[in-house]
Length: 220
Image (cartoon, rainbow, N blue to C red; front, side):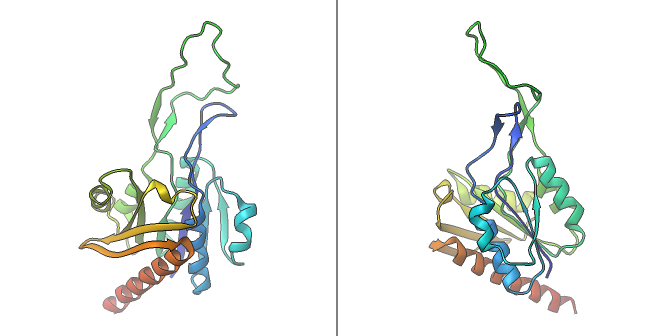
């Protein structure tokens, strides 16, 4: 199966030096790309700004690396490759909003002491758009919530037409260890507690691999 993995944050710049983003490290996505490539699946990793110096030793030869910054850039990179892939792991923590106005020069502190007010607009919902146009592709979404996580994951699973969705919490950000819950259209299919992200990646790739092969066999 041909695999595309997204990982890391995206950045939406307010001016040349300030941006809206999040604390995603990109580790889980890198581990998923490694697990997929190690199992013989041609793999592309579309990544936001991550520490490649830290991750390069973990990325096996042959993984196609595509660097992006903004949500729009990530969307274009995926759209260009979507028809040619079988499985998408949408691990990236994309920014939900971007500034309406970008300041081409660094914004200064206002001399009159007044507050600086910014207006933001929604970014593209990449996964929802892909879910609406998918044909043979198997889509795996990731959902990080601070409350009502499983309820929100079920809603997103259905709204975005996902095959699987992986639920996790903010305590997993930047950590080597994570606890996740995996849901399909019937409900919870796996819970992996206090596992390394490398182990979670292997288990998830093997779960998707099994389901992908079962789908192929059912179509023959």
